[in-house]
Each structure stands twice: as C-alpha cells, then as structure tokens.
Image 1 (cartoon, rainbow, N blue to C red):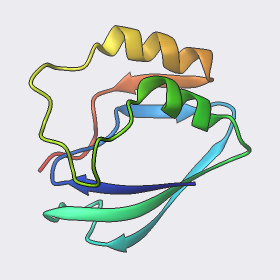
Image 2: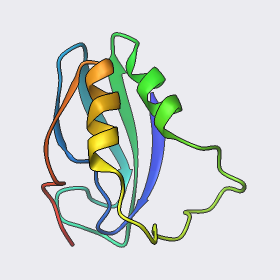
Image 3: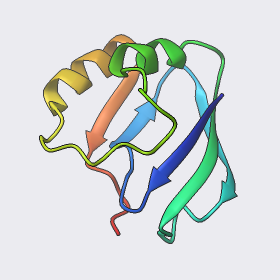
Length: 97
C-alpha cells in the first residue's frame, strides 16, 4: 500500500498489471474529475509491485510535492522496467487536467 499526494494533471501511463490487482482509496480530492490535489491510497496485491516503485523512485528530501519535472520521462526505459515486473505500458495517462 502506498499513500500518494498528487498535484492536478499527474497520473501514471495507461497500463495493465499482469501479476497483481490494483485499487485506489481516495481520501481527499478527486481522481477522475481533477482537483488541485488528490490524496489516495494505492493498493496492489499480491506483493511485488513495490519493487518496481522502489527501482523507479528516488527518496524525497522533504515532505512536499516536488516541482514538475523539467524533462519528459524516458518512456522506453520505464516500459522495459515495467515489463520486468509484469506491467504492460499501453499509452499515456488517460486523464488530463
């Protein structure tokens, strides 16, 4: 289980988990109708997805939402890593602000 605090317009690429189920529990804001921020729990089961998150992430220096990236993500590298964890990237995020 991961707790997320996401700014408007953020989202993961459209994808399929082949090894686990994924669900969300929204505690503040909205995910399908964009709000300024949304706080939610992301749950995947069984375990394994956390390895993908750890490999793709870097620790936060402080408890604030970081500024937006200045460079686009390396989608090909992310797709290769995702495939190692049974995740298939299908396209860009489906919800835009």
